[in-house]
Image (cartoon, rainbow, N blue to C red):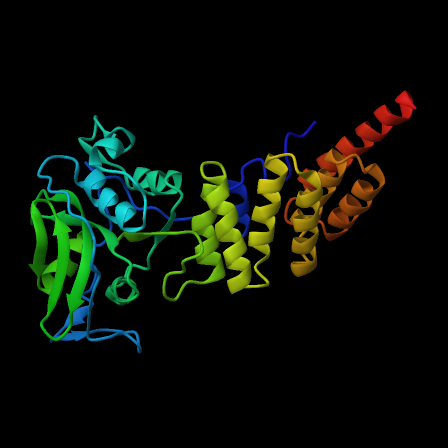
Length: 336
């Protein structure tokens, strides 16, 4: 028997891939070559290029804790700062075992995102632009950034951006042993470009970063299904209030209901997704499996027939679901 519906088996990876939600992570901290060294500047002659129209001249985020660190724990220190700001009870010592990779003497970007999700926060990777970074600061979200410090060999370093002033040409960071490190915008951007201009915010479920689309936000929520299901459920529900036609959120709620064996609720969510996205067979396949798990073989047959008629994007999966339904029907008939 198939253990779970399409995309419920691999809630984040398979569903994200189909819907175009895969996160493109940069390399890893400690010994990788990241793109961005030749990236053109985004701040020139005192002006922010491609400045968002509603971006204020200056902004700062108040109340961000500071953990001084001049060792290899800049990752845990930076993450502790933004998680505590978002209301998570944690600290550097508790995060170190999750984040430090001894062989690298540092922290992987992937692990920063994973630890954020395990703390029931949405790890949202921002667009690699100064405009996006500053928009998040203006919205009250401190931003974890990856920098490459130094001209030749360079050192990978995490810090937290907490403020900017376009008129004064400054960026303010929590960094290493400096509570309020002030750099010129160009100086900061050169180090950030060396890290691929990678950064993220840690958000309470249902808090949306500026400029977020349903696809981008839900790509950040999907990996939470397996590690923080209650937070994922809250985020999906908030997403549906924000984007009522977000069928991926409906699928996510169905996945979560299926995982806790609430097959009736899962069927409701998958049916909603099928109505919202009628040219995709995956919601109907999931609906068929939820109905089968609930014991309604006839309804499961009807749902999978519709999925097979659509035929995409996973026709072979739908065929296997049909065969599973027929095996269940035969077993039931033999018992009767």
